[in-house]
Amino acid sequence: MNTQQIIDTTEDNCFHVYNRFDVVFDKGEGVTLYDTDGKEYLDFASGIGVMALGYNNKEFNDAIKTQVDKLYHTSNLYYHPSLAEASKALCNVSGMDKAFFTNSGAEAVEGAIKTAKKYAFNKSSHNGYGIVAMENSFHGRTVGALSVTGTESYRNPFYPLMDKVEFAKFNDFETVENAVSSDTCAIIIEPVQGEGGVTPADKDFLVKVRELSDKLDILLIFDEIQCGMGRTGNAYAYMGYGVKPDILLTAKALGGGLPIGAFLVTDKVAKNSLTPGDHGTTYGGNPLCCAAVKASIDLMAKNKLTDNVNSLTPYLEEKLDEVVNKCDIALSHRGKGFMQGIVIDNKVKAGDIVKKCLAEGLVVLSAGGNVLRLLPPLVINKDDIDKAIDIIISVCNNCN
Image (cartoon, rainbow, N blue to C red; front, side):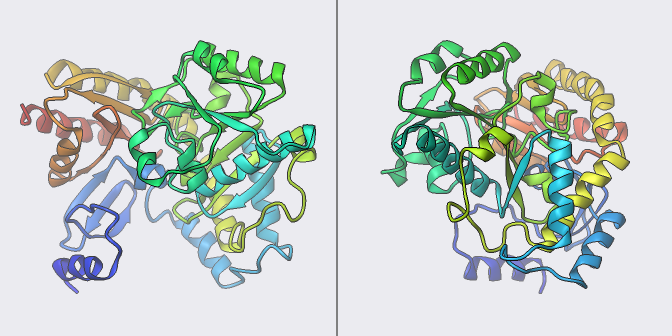
């Protein structure tokens, strides 16, 4: 099929819940994508923060191919080597004690909510406990994850959702304190809000929320589905803040492009929450995706990708300053590591800039608050940054 036939066939047969761009990607190499017409695109979106290793990494591919030839499904009724290796590697790199593998980030959120409710139930034999979540947060599209997503437009068509969810203002501890009640079993926070506008948490805010959680014996959940796996310059963003959660959520880059997520807990939570029969999944933690987890973690360490993030972040931020200085519609920038956002003047839609960048061979994203979002693979170099910034400046200056 040619490009248009692929687009038409997809539209004829797939439920139209995505407004896809009119491009058909065919292959990738390093930080470059190629469409079916052979055009090159510099990728500063990495499949919404997934392709941390870039494309066609031979060592990663070889690990997957080896596992395909051995075994790629058993269910969780049985043990397999990949699960042992992936769980050990993930617990070691995350600093957490126990892992539960899911198929996606949203499922990790669902598992964390159930874990927190069961923890509260075990304390008082009452299962009506609620969650405090943040405004402008995004945690997924399933009912539980949507219930704690802090954007009304996402939730509104799907009421009634999970009850007893209170929303506080991100980086405003007083509103969190006011939202917590005797019914609260957990507080869920993205250390860096992604979809909500690429906004990092203040350290003092997280410290105070941690202290409040300890005081009341409620669980603190960090959603690092987007900001984890090296993106902020630490294996997980919480490490840069020095504030450890009770439950940590991870996905996206975890499987190097294969669909897998996880929620991780401390020993205290593991011993006082879910037991056999409380939770499960048919595909979660399958041998193939677990091999991808192990390979991703090993290659991030071998290639020192967090060092690359930390080394290049000052340069990236310097170039983002250049965007703000040279482009009237670029008002400011914010973020951590290779998770950056440019705030765009409301007279121009960030989504329109995304489309024009794509036409110029640069893949970027938008986010809430009219923000242009950059989530490049962790393997980019200075030349990649220069090329991306040149395109962004040119596009922004032609949007006035």
